[in-house]
Image (cartoon, rainbow, N blue to C red):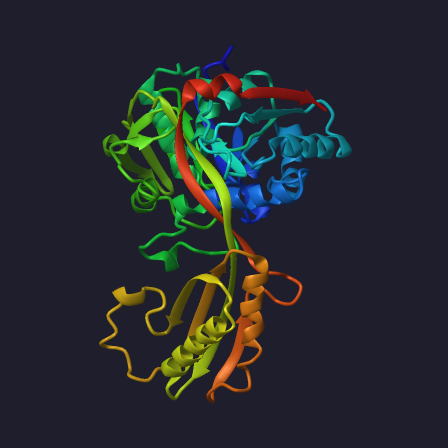
Length: 442
């Protein structure tokens, strides 16, 4: 059975990226939302977690999960707010076990901790991929909620689907009611990047919206017909307006007329936004088409190792000095026959953020200072480290004005391991029958 059809469900954003402060969850909980959703994953983040699990089978999930549960569980236990998170990353089983252990140790008896898991091999070429993931839709989370889960831990469920799931559960939406599924996906997309819907990343008068002493995250109040009102906790900074909401609506969207998710293909061009009061924007008229038959997956393969340095030279001839030193380092590596696969140079203060696309005709001929970055990619960690060792030869032999050298890999830290991430597509009928749901009572 799906949940009883409630008139309005209030869903709060609790996280938009791994590394975002867990303290940002508190205003949503204090506002009394029905659900708080934490979106911890991005494709790069999944790569980090894949590397973690390859090194240690007991990890591979978001390391801040414990801190988040420490904040969330009292609200879940005492106020009835339900928590949904994809912090399980590449190891949702271990994340679920940690959640159960934390709830038990905290004395929150009776809480039900749900797990949504898919762990079947699906990669098209497992000879080279050491890890793979498939973007799941909302169904597994809905099943966990139907089984009474107060907290749901998942792996790679699509961002907006995390928010769609409680709406399907509470409102009783059918899986072929494409317009309502699109409406829920739109609401999820508006909340998935946390503070961006209330002025983060806003290109307008940001100076009037940002106050980092009172940060809150957005809330969606969603009716049974799919109409949503985007707002924020009272007393928090930021702004919910036509402009802030529409910027997030188009964020990371390839085709606004066909936003493809595992649950529905949503037409964002049909969406209407109405400011109905201070920090309240009504979102309505979403349209949807049948979900795609194939799901997107990702393979993760070894990409070698990277090292980098950054150095700053002062006037005069700052750019020329930087270029000479970086050119010399590359020549030195070649003379030692260090096999570098790829070099990359940037010159901040001289077009570093835009490269050759930057028009420098109006810049001064001789900048007061330039910061240069040299990065390299090798097949082995030893080769990447060998280039780093060459840096020690230049500090006191460089032109005048060197302000310091920053190294990405200091002694003992080692170079950064790289990943290659490649998409693939798989028929959903090969995936969905193998999605498992488990709910454990503490």
